[in-house]
Length: 72
Image: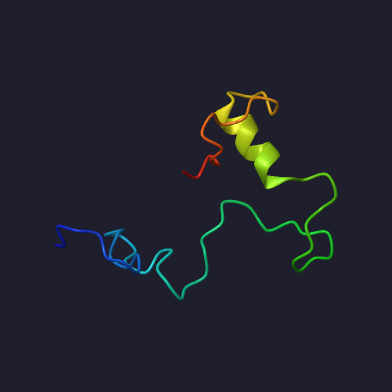
């Protein structure tokens, strides 16, 4: 068993060692939903707004005080 996490993300999940490691497909909880079905972002959907809603406890107008996204 590894004591430290690997830089490529492999072996971070003991049940599925390749889950979300570098070079593999990212595991999704829901299907992707793009405007063109491939990569075009839907109109009105802004990742920063979503992040602010999560970090701002449900209020998209409340921005992260450090200017970071919810991923940080």
